Image (cartoon, rainbow, N blue to C red):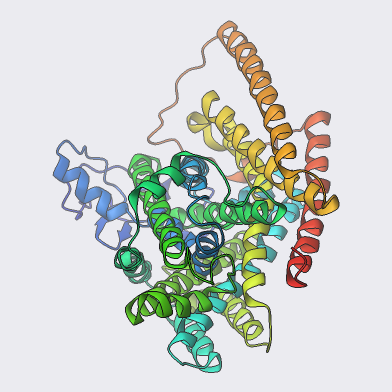
Length: 557
């Protein structure tokens, strides 16, 4: 790269600095170094000029925006649409309170991967493998590959159900969607791919006319948002759905996707604040759309024979047509199709990025098919195999979709723990490591997620247990945990105050050195034991989740 290039984002007159390619780097694929080529603008690699006016900042944001919006809206995928529709159809607006609680979870988790991607220049899977070893890498990344593949299957279920509403056979719609998805991704242009994705982001707002057709009432919606409760009482089935809402809104694949996509877009520490804005916007759009889908089905089916009888997303479209008219059914089918495509694109790409990280192969959307055969071959294989599974006759599509979302909720604590370990690794993030308050907040998030899965486990093993009493007990245990955390924070502050100040590092230009130069962190016996306990717990939770799914499939609610 020439040193004397100028930014053409239109944001400002810039000065230049030596290219990041001139310094030692941990970047695995050289295509991850260079200009930011966003959907709405370019920022040159040597751009170090200030952004003093709001206009200049807006133009810079437009060039950077993308990874945050795509990862968040992509999480409102086929499984998300189906799960939110199920929540509204079976429980009215009583579960809306779960959504605003998920905004800080989304922002906290994804902000951490924003820093990891921009500062390290490598993907999440590679960091876990290199810092914690192959055993723990297999623990985290192995779960990711399995969960992602099952999630991709649900995306093609969504395609089948959406186009099935219009009378298109799944034997036509699913293969055509699979081929189109591969062609769209393997174009060899990051900018072209991002523009495709942002079209789907905009299409996500079709939920607005959809909810209008359901004639919603504001008062019940506000009540559902601010007053926690479950229509019909708390049961193991409603807990399963709450976990599914968590799993579909805050999924493990998001961590891997956004970090790798930031690396692929060539975002560096200088632009972290802009990417944070992108991420917050995406989280708000996601929760907004989820709210409208729950409201639509709640008001459309609230006083009809279909209330409480969710089958799958396809039946929702037909039900909306029956009670609200053709326009509502058509809009829901289009929303489902749009969600399925953007979800399949993002989840499959997250998996292919991770393959590239783990196996050391070229993995960038800046490369064409001929220049990154293994990367695009893995993407194509995942898409085609997932599509083939959907074509199996008489598969329980609705149950598969809900179970996969719940599985994501069960596995999320593990993904968050590894994320926290990386974000507190000074060798990896230097001056960008987590602040104490962020660690406390993230720890509380993990505790809540584990508590939810504990409820699911207990109600599966002991079907007659009082779920309300169980929730109260876990709430008391959580309060004790908060008090213990406060004590730990106080002790930590006293210890830090007694330590000498370390020299400040330049945040905007600091990047992680090559991984080969870093000494692997050593875990204490306590931490190692805790990780093994977490692993054993998750294996048990997954088994019990499968038992619960089989029970529901057999009609034993």
